[in-house]
Length: 603
Image (cartoon, rainbow, N blue to C red; front, side, top):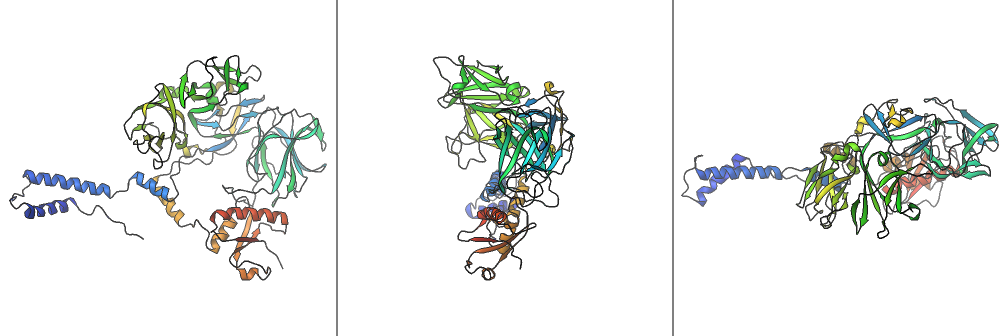
């Protein structure tokens, strides 16, 4: 380890004594060393200044520690909002907007997406093989109902399908969501990561029409084919007729296996069409860009869709882009589409000026007076305090007056530091730990001059959002007072901001884990933890052992024998496991090192 030099190696008394000893050789006429002598007073002053400078030179400042973490490829973890699954019960089909606020006491949650909630939840689901029903579950509508349903039967195979049955026809052209809780049992599947995951099966998502089965549109399967808890999101382009399937009457959609097999038959323990995802967050202000097209222009106006609760019920500012600068417009109004009744923002457009791009900023009415952060002076290293330490680090965007075009504004970008910023870069740093916005010095980051306003900002309680079940009790809007809500899952994932000391402790722990696979233990650990798989064991064997059953084994390759949970020889599953394990190992594999995956052969 390199020695750490100490820059604060002299005390005040040592500095003063050294200066006093120099006097005799430098200026022998100076003979009065008493404290009341003016010269000695100056020596004491300079000794104190030098001692103070040495002390601060020997300290590692906050900016330095942030740089050290960056060199290690790390940064302090910001506050993370908690999320929860909320069940909504209503007597009529209800369209909820993104950002709709839910309350757990005084704690605010917001819906992550816009959703259509059905008055009638799912009737049930069937596992179908050909024309035969091999498993089924029928729901009573209880909020905490637990089931043990095999969506593709005990032996999933190509052609098997999971059919969801509705009591009433789901609305057309609405984005619907089906929440599914996948039962884990004794087997725990490795969690997913950023590593690409190859699914076990190729699935077709369809709904039944008068012309037979047709593909669903806008499909998103967060469950990865019934492997994890999550939402199955979809929409339909035409109505579903009342029909009969396997002796059951209703309205049908299905998920069908077109290719592949599962390593373990999936099992569902809970499902509902009336679950929404909520995040513990309070959006103070938000912005959105809008580029009008031909269909958005009519009757001399531009109509912009309003897609969040804040955009409809908050205060709105509208800006027009001219020569890379945003200029505020005062003439606009909020209205509704006469056909769909969806909220719109109408902006008049004159014949002599065509609007090419708009910036919409929406603010909570309670935060309207707090939208101005301060006034830029044009001096370097300016700081402004938001006086709020609960603001999410990545939520802050600034709109600052353009010093060259008065009355115009430019959006400024948040960065982690000014190391890569130039004198013309409109960058700022947000210290979320203290709620302070910092600007550059003119060489590293441009300096602001003019009004500084918040364009986006959100607050969170971090770990305070990790609430128990049944704590969310109502919507904030009075119009939704008759809608029953409760969180059927606990609030999970909320974290407070990581302190600098904890970040360095984490850095030390990371240093103990190799970032490149070198030893056999490294490869075995990576193989066992391959995302999306269930692996009982993995073992690296030598090339000499491989040559006992494969003559052309590469001597310089890494040979890993992998045993999936409940392994039975199956070429399709072996291929899927091999692809996922190699995807997991690839970021850590040394250049020139080949990896070979084998599966047990029992003799």
